Image (cartoon, rainbow, N blue to C red; front, side, top):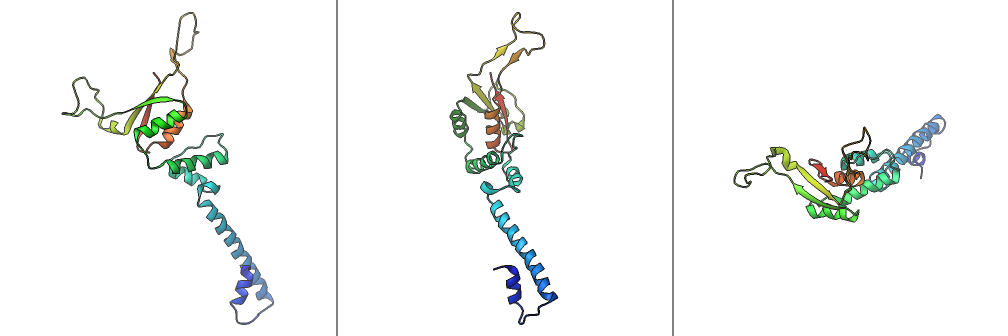
Length: 182
């Protein structure tokens, strides 16, 4: 049933004429509003989101890549929502292992009397929000006389941006990851 028909039923008698035209226009506007509500109901869930996808990404703390397609962005949001709730070290190690990387994770903490020893690193108090991810098996390229040319870096390694992006997307928002490729 269209909204114009529902509006006609609200009146005890048929007024006709100009009133009929007003009811049609009002009914058409209500039909458009209903269609918009139906669209927004689809937007409530990330697997059908289009207009509100940027809001889903903001809530999940995801920055989409410039080349990401709509479906890739939706999948990233859904993956993030499914992953929330598990924050242990083994989980992040397993995520990296599933991608073919071997990593270790070290949680930094400030020097504390009674717990730390002489020779331990003196970190600031905020270091409790930083963790160090060591990526094993990386190829390091050193500058070598006779093999390298002017302008090249003294030390270079391939940055694993895919792994870094995934771990940064999954980590708690208040933490910071330092990646160590040595």
